[in-house]
Image 1: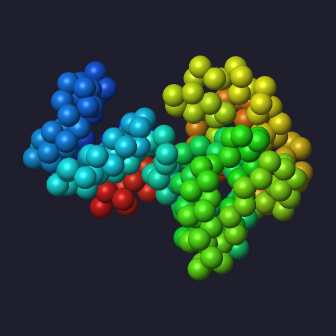
Image 2: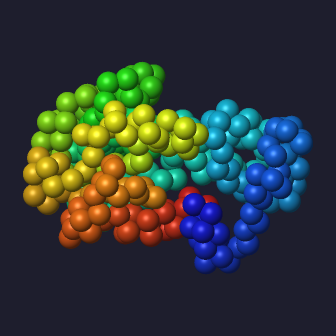
Image 3: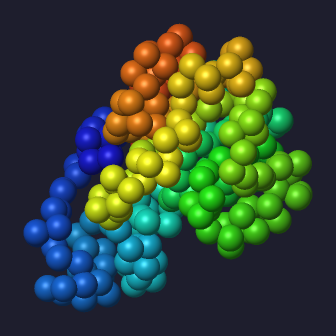
Length: 247
């Protein structure tokens, strides 16, 4: 995230300043409100990659310059801008494309659901029981999709990947869940992209992963290197999508 934003800003002729957690201590050394107000006097935009979504919301509430959510525990909107760009490049359309996200109903899944609903894509999220996306996300994205022709589905059934045009996965333990990694490995074992998953999907289905990948867990190495894989196009598109966002 940092490299794609900083490289993008440099290519646009601008300059990026990185503030590590130890530099800024959001909400600890200074209040989030004060940080937002001070940075607004120095910078033309703020990109925040944080854990708690409430921090991004508070930054945006008080800042007088645009605030970009680079990642939070609720959404990952910059990632899915690149995802949709990659899907459009490979499939040539959004309407009617069936995307299956297999794994944890996490921040990436949330943003994919919201985005797919707005674009008229069909979005199926396949998770183990108890790890579905937040109910309010399912409800909101379903309501949005009603006006665009998008169908949003949340299920525990791996067979729902049948005929998918896009297969997408992410790590089983997201940021802040590292202590649960061992337990989650047992729960998520079947929820992965491998040769068996590819057999269910459309023969021309593309493979996406937001990286970093844990090969042997949510995706195996051989599958990630198939001609169908668009993972590294997707990674490159982070920079291009974020340049468009900043402009």
